[in-house]
Length: 275
View 1 (cartoon, rainbow, N blue to C red):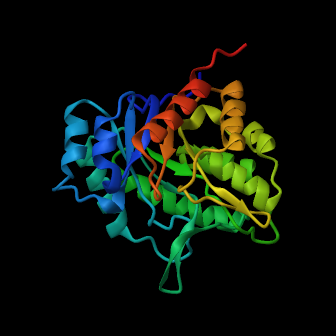
View 2: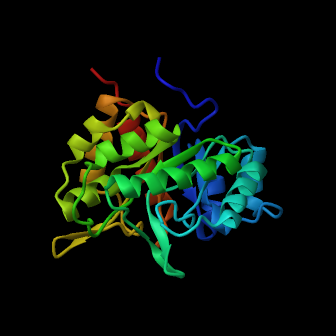
């Protein structure tokens, strides 16, 4: 029997950001939202987040700073903050990235790729398990949009993530825009990645816009959704329809009707009747 995350998000959602808080609060057809955990204080949630929660809209905390793939000791204060935010939101799940953001005492400010080696996988697994011991809710892990790949990979992208899930019990937050970035920037075959992943462990999906310049795809979260991203969502749903999909937007916010149209495009793909 396939695993099920009880009470997880369903339907179509959008990332909550302070710049569009009232837009998100008032937009029709939003089944759940996701908020960056580092932007929230567990004891003083923003009013619009509190309104959404009172309305029964699930709010999922999404961390960006745990550095789960880093070789330096895990920052337990950051894990505890994520746990406190998840508790304040009564969230069904919390998430972060298969990445590192800290090395040599320096914060990169960016999500950096983890080498696809067994040694790096072991470090990542240890950090994920330590996080799970504190978190109090299930943990989902997201693939990032890499600009480079470390040499001497021992595992494919799909095999790496599959083993990570198998050995930790973690869930997947699958970003189809980041799969497209990996295809353009690293030459990875996104269809092969989908075939190798344990898709039954995908709790929800990220979709976002980006732009390609001089052969490099930049996951900007500041541009409209593109056809390749929607096509990858469609390919995923053909294999195994995820419970939910979420639109990310972090900059250059368009008018509300354009955001609503992007949500409708995601819903159309997600809800399409499959043969």
